[in-house]
Image (cartoon, rainbow, N blue to C red):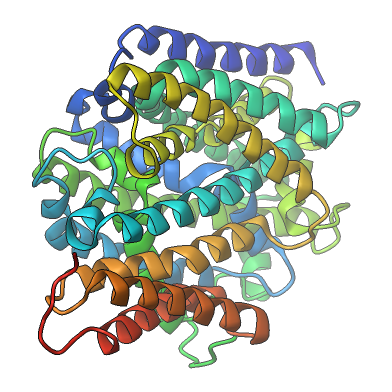
Length: 467
C-alpha cells in the first residue's frame, strides 16, 4: 500500500482515539457516560442513527448484493418497512422513553412486568449485539487485509477491536455520537468518490445499459413467496417489524434518542434518518451495478462481500484508496460497547453507587469488546453475506423482545405470561429459522406475534397485573 494511503488511515485512527480523550474529560457520571447529559442536538442524533444503522456491513455487503449473479435493487423494498416503522416509533414509542429518567429501554419492562422480564430482554440484547458487531469487525478486517497484503484477517480484527475498545472506554456515548456525525460525511464521501472512479472506468451510460440488460434495476417483487428474502411484502411487513424492534426496543439505537433533551427532538431525528438511509442504500446498490459493469460476474473473489474491497485495494488511485478505507473504518467505529455496558449495569446488576457503576461500566466495555473480537475471529470461514447474517441475528432476537413490549401495552399480561410468551417466541423463530426456508425478514414477525399470542392466551381473564 502506498505510504500516503497508510498515512491517511493511521491519521484517522489517531483522530478517533484523540476524540475519545477529548470527550473523556467529561465522563465522570453514568448520566454523562451513557446519556451524554441529554445535550446532543437532534440533527447530530439523526446522523448518528444513520451511521449506526449503516456500519461496515452496509458499506461492503450492499454493493455485493447488487453485483452478485441475480442481484438487483430489490433490497430497497426493506426500506419501505424501515420508514413505516420510524413513523410509528416517533408517534407512539418516543413519548414512552421520555416519561421518566431512563438509562435503558428495558427499564420500561421493569415498571410493567418486574425484574425477570427486564433481565431476559436485556440478556438477549447483549448476546445479539455481541454477535452482530463481531460480524462488523470481520467485514472491516476483510477490507484492511485486502489492502495491507501481508497482514492476516485475525490480526486486523484484533487491532480494530482494540481501537474500538480504547475509544469507547474513554469517551463514552458522547464521543461515539459526535464521531458518528463525522463518520457519516466520511463514508458517504468515500462511496461517492469510489463511484466516480468506477464511472470513469466504465462510463455511466454503458454501466446503466449493462445493469439494465442484467435486470439489476428491478426494485419490486410482488410475489407472496416467504422463502424469498427481498419482496414487497417481506419489505413492508417484515421490514416494519424488524425496524420496530431494532429502532424501537433495542438499546443500541434507543440510547441515541435518550441523548436528546425531549421526545420531539428524538422523533424528528428518527424520521429524517429514514430519508437519508433510503438515499444511501440506493447509492450503495448503484455502486454494485458499477462493479458489475467493471468486473462482470467473474471478479477474483470468493464471496460478494469481497468485491468492493477488491476494487478499493486494486483500482483506486493513491490517496483515494486510503480515504475510502478510512471511510470503511469510520463505519466500523459505531461501537455498541457503551450500550452493552449500560444494559448490564442498569438492568442486570445493582452497583452500590454511581462511582462503583462507572468503574463497572469501564470493565464491562473491555470485556464486551474482547467478546466481539472473539466472534469476528470465529466467523471468518462463513461464505454467507455478512449483511444477511447480521440482520438474521437481529430478527431472531429482537422479535420476541418487541413482542413483550406489545404485551406491556395490554392490561391482562402478567410477569409469568410475558416470560412464557417470550420463551415461545424464541422457540418459534428458532424453529422457523433452522427447520424451514422462510427468509429472515419474517423472523421478527414470527417472534413478536408468537410472543403476543402466547402471552395473551396465558394471561388471566381477570386482568391481573404483573407483580
